Length: 159
Image 1 (cartoon, rainbow, N blue to C red):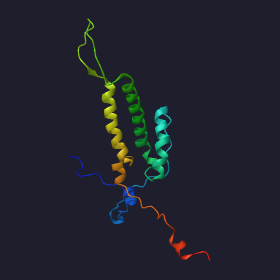
Image 2: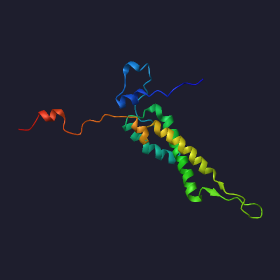
Image 3: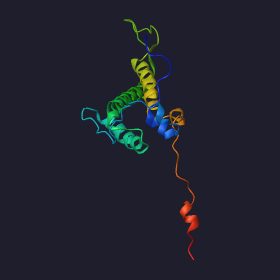
Image 4: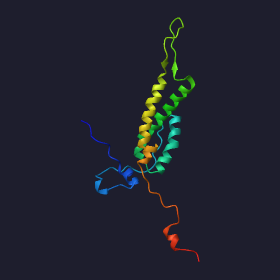
C-alpha cells in the first residue's frame, strides 16, 4: 500500500512561508545551494526555457543544484509542448481521411492535440512544484523587508 495523505511540505518552503517549526524537521537532507548547470544534451528550445526560468527560480530561493533533473524535464516538456502547439497552429486540430475514391470517411484529431494536452497537464504539475503558477505561489509566503525608512533612519535625523 502506498503512502497516505498529502506529501509533506519541504522545510525550505515552510521557511519561506514563515511557518517552519524546527522541532518537526527530522534529518531532512539539505541540497547544495546554487543554480544547476544546464545539461548539454538538451535541445536549443529547452535551453532557451532553462535560461529564462532558472535565474528567476534561483533568485526566489526555490532552486538548488539537486533540482537540475526536475528542471531539465520541465524545459524538455516545454519545448515539446511548443512544437506540438506550433503544429496545431499551422495544420489545425483535425483532419479528414479519405477512402480510395476520395470521399471523406470521418474527421479525426491530429496526434499532436493529445500530445499537447498531456504535456500541458505535466507542465502544470511541475510549474506548481516550482511555484511558477498563481496557486503554487499562493502556498509560498516570503516576508519582504519594509518599504519605508528603516527604524535606524527614524532615530537619526540630519541637523
